[in-house]
Image (cartoon, rainbow, N blue to C red):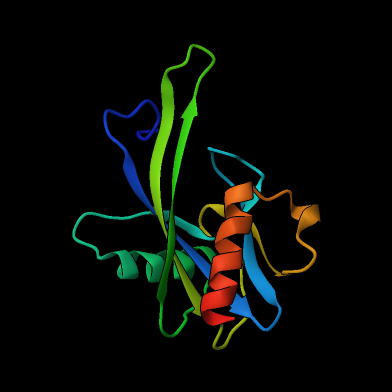
Amino acid sequence: MTDREYPTRPFVGIGIVVIKGDHVLLCQRGKPPNLGSWTLPGGAQDVGETCEEAARRELMEECGLAVGELHFCAHVDTIRRDEDGRVRFHYTILDFAARWVAGEPVAATDVTSAVWAPMDALEPYGLWSEAHRIIGIARRLVG
């Protein structure tokens, strides 16, 4: 069990949609929740850190990439319950969008893979419906 399991309050999560032409950056999770699933890069905001600082830090830590201007995209509430109905994970995720500037993703820290996925062929990645929604918004903002 992690220190974020069975919380007494929600945690702020930060996500970032990085668009490179007609591709989007996806990461394969190396830790729970959703171990092994494909998602957008991101993680928890640290105390004393702005949302944008958290987005940039998480992107650098997970994929070794830096981006230019960030645009607020949307928010997602994710609440995962256990078999007894108790809240096991609770995140309010603030998603940002940015255009790729330079560099290639390298999986690091808590991801096992990072790839440029074609936005018109995301089905093989089994993304959560909210990830599709956020990518669509990001595409309109910065694509």
